[in-house]
Image (cartoon, rainbow, N blue to C red; front, side, top):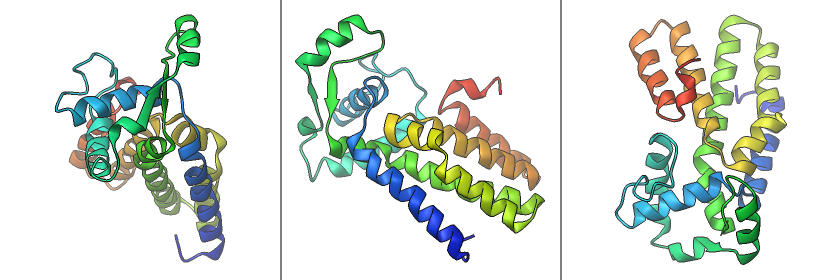
Length: 200
């Protein structure tokens, strides 16, 4: 996959866009919820202790070691602040919270999401290459990396759906390879990332 100069160029552009957007964008619900979960875990509690975290446990399990290491280099208190301007908005807009997270937090919380996008791109290439021509595999992978929706979900909103997508694609890859047990395990991980994969 990486032997093609065309692929390397477009992958570099797709990953660069994600890395540039990640620190400077946030979402008033999801990133703030992840912030509260991280703060609970760093204080020795479950992310579910304060009833702020509505998602299954895979993403907090990925975030904990990242932020534990980061806490040795940076004060966790500096990662987020309550905003008086957002308190008024939050009182009138459902699912909005008055927490602003720092660029450092925004970047670190999105690292697993960007890594999942990269993993998904590799799996898309592998699946397409297994069933089609090299050019189809390259075009499909480039489309994935430049897809505005994928960039928006992982690098702007900071939603963990990109981890779920990576798990689903890995499930499909293992089904193609007839690795039934591994496909089942990876599918279970997708369910523990976001439960809506179960009906899928």
